[in-house]
Amino acid sequence: MIENEKLYSNGNENIRIIKIGGHTKTELIQKMNTNKIFLNELAEKLIASDYLEISKEPYMVKVIELTVKDLGFSEGAVTSQLFSKAAKLELELCPLELALYLRLAYLNQTEGYNENQLQNQAPYGSITIASKIFSKDVNFPKGFYLRKIQGDLWLRGYVADEAHVWNSHDRFVFCVTKQ
Picture: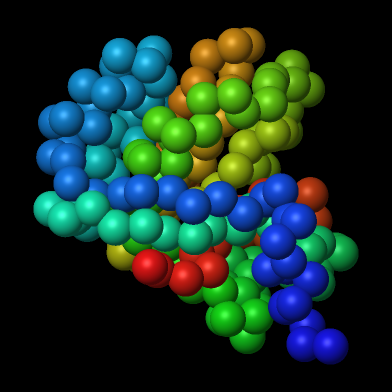
């Protein structure tokens, strides 16, 4: 059996097909405002950057949500290890714009508030979008994650250096195929 066959089985509830593209940044921000989706300062900075390109033409993306442990790292792993293992499983990094569309599509996310949240760790219940890291500047956002905090939906940017170890229970979204 191929190692990734289990990941792609039709019964995997962690697989979604998302339509992305066809909107402007302004339209997407308006849609998030309409849906009461909040942005942190890092998300605003990444959205305003030239790194976030929004496709003019809509297209479909098949994505899968996996834990670090699902990728074979029961003790956690750094980002480069996660991305390398995902590539071996024929998974791709997501286009940065996917985060905005996924946030708009995933309005029933599980509550992720935990008053005992540790600093410098992915927040409980968060889902990080695996995407290309555009800047080595440790203060510039590396990507987006989705979170629900006390009933409020968030699209948040994050910073992490190359030595950051993601915990085994941290969740990531990867692209299976671009259709």
